[in-house]
Image (tube, rainbow, N blue to C red; front, side):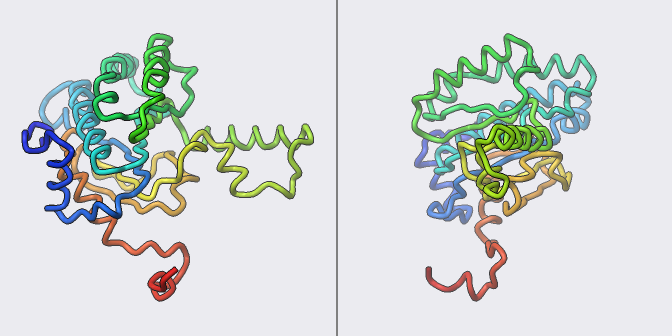
Length: 263
């Protein structure tokens, strides 16, 4: 993987590498969301236990977090564990929880000046996992670079239901008029209210669906699907996704001619 290439050990080297692959560093998406799929299938294809795929996937998280930070991404949101994942075999869930603990390396965040945030039903997590994550959130809160958001025990439908309940409660208490409810009202009631919507959503592993991930926020995101399993996704793969994104025309309901007109 590119993370093992000494030529990519510095920010300048990573940026030069991206330019060589055709990435326009002046048009990097402010927010990229990723569905990290294919860990289990990667392991199965090699005759390994599924947990080994998740362990290798952590190495990919470290590489992509570093690359995204160096290339100027503002927010990187990773679908780490969905509410549906609680239905997996107990042994696999336990292994994932343990892996989350070992993956929360403070050095990765401090070295890259990355701030950590978390969204999801974190009250369902084991206490030691919650303490480790929120301790790291606090310790990285003064970092000024990229914000990495982990969606943990997360479901977009859960998030939207929670937002609706919050808004309904405000209306019931007379704090908000029914006619004043807008898209912005919903935006502000979501767990992601502190960051912009993703311009680009990447899904690895060959599946072509959103899997209950940032459904409201991805209304106008560009979707990039690739067959590469997450453990094999690397800096080159990430740059290829960026080039694909930059070659698209984002019209937001307008015509190509309207988009081409100077603002």
